[in-house]
Length: 290
Image 1: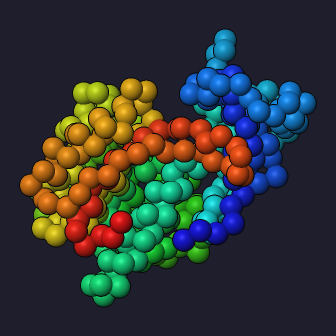
Image 2: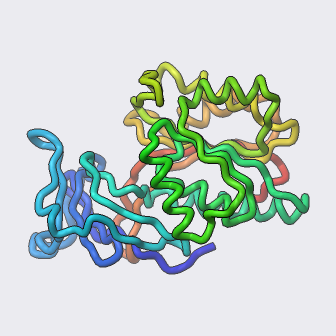
């Protein structure tokens, strides 16, 4: 499902990216952009605000931005706000994954006549949750941050999905998965975007190099006997698509299906160089079309 979008990558280079989020053009760090910018400095100077990580993390001209504003990507609406870490409450590089989720869930719902059960872990502001709900799933949305769970709920309301079949959970992912397994609750699909480093709701420490395999094992334990897909993505330097595919493939080695992998990209108009911004791997059953 491809519709008009209020986001576009305008340019990148010299370790930065120039992006448009609705009416606002922003300049932010992008370590992968080792090439030279294509646009002239005067175009970059038109950014209404910028963020850098030199001498601490800070915004420049943050006051030029409203406290929050709303944009749409492929028909999904998101509330944005400049955070102290330079994030805005949206990772637009995920939009190709949202499109894929939409297609996989719609096809499964049409085939079975019921809503697939989807578990979204480390779910942030809810882009994947919104995509799955809109396509006809019932979703369990989990994040360790109460503020981010509320942000996702606000986004659901923006999309007229406040009454959709979704459970909003603020919890440590591993603790919750363990309880779900013991309760016998099962899901047709799992989506997870684990952080490089994070803290659970009660201060638990998550380190992806130590905990990713455990996360996937716990996800495997709560998959239904006839699962649809597992979608794994991340932004950890050094965790290439092959690495994600290898660990996911080991987790799902007895399930048949197929493994796919790739980079997540920020994109703009034709001629704008795409900017890698994370990686993904997914396992899909034979019932999920490519």
